[in-house]
Amino acid sequence: MGAVKVSTRGDYASRALLSLALHADDGRPNSVRDIAERTGLPQPYLEQILLALKGAGLVRSKRGVGGGYVLARSPEEITLADIVGAVDGPIAAGDFGEPHTNGACDHEGQCVLLAIWADVGERMRTHLGSIRLADIAGMTRGERIWPGEEPPPPARRGR
Image (cartoon, rainbow, N blue to C red):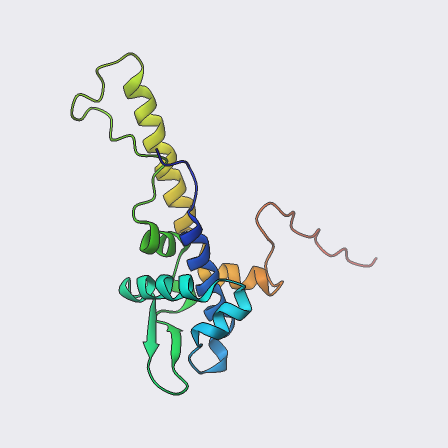
């Protein structure tokens, strides 16, 4: 049974795309080796993930000398839900099935819990869909507050 978690693939894919977003201004494709060095991710695994991201239309590749990967869309248009969905498939709280289908409610309390797990999955999709690659790049650069951090107090005016 799947737990409520993003897989290693989802994390690695997010880190790879964040690296591309942070270096998008360089104006040239990023080699798999460069991305692997910057992120500390194993290169063979990273190659598989980038191919999956290319298949999902999140990155483009350029062949030959000076080749590599670039984002296929702007960081403002790519969400964590897009990235995780591209490599992990549908985001769900677990593999429970939907309430009220295929005799799913044959046992006491089962449908209530199935409805709750479905709701948890929906909230996770919504939350991941609200976080854009551009937001994460801003946090990494120190331009935005991180999740769970308090915003700085407003500057006090001199009297």
